[in-house]
Amino acid sequence: MMQRVCFLLKVRADRLDEYRERHAAVWPEMLDALSANGWHNYSLFLREDGLLVGYLETEDFAAAQAGMASAGINARWQAEMAPFFEALDGARPDEAMKPLTEVFHLA
Image 1 (cartoon, one colour):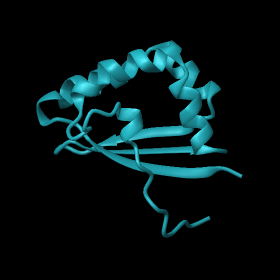
Image 2 (cartoon, one colour):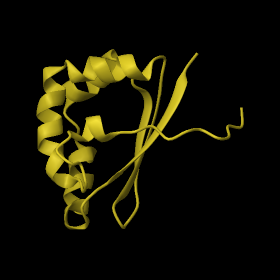
Image 3 (spheres, rainbow, N blue to C red):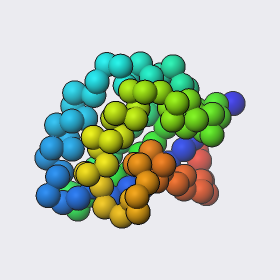
Image 4 (tube, rainbow, N blue to C red):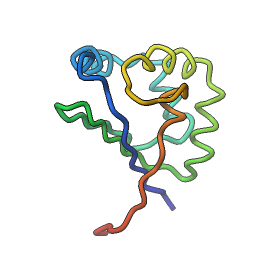
């Protein structure tokens, strides 16, 4: 059974255009790592004020996160992406993703 995971982050207002550009050309190795580690139907939505909503489906979110944490390509991607975000408090963006509680789903 797939878990649906949704999370929020905040992209800095002065980096919105560059953030969009980076995600229009995600490294193929990063895409492969996400797929190999169980990240399915992964989407990011960005509001004009920088609110970023992420959504993915996975069989085991903790395992999917752990798999990406051990992928060298992910460490490089997260290091490059960290300056785009507000309020990470020293965490990498992928470590700052805190899933929201699902309160309704129309099947």
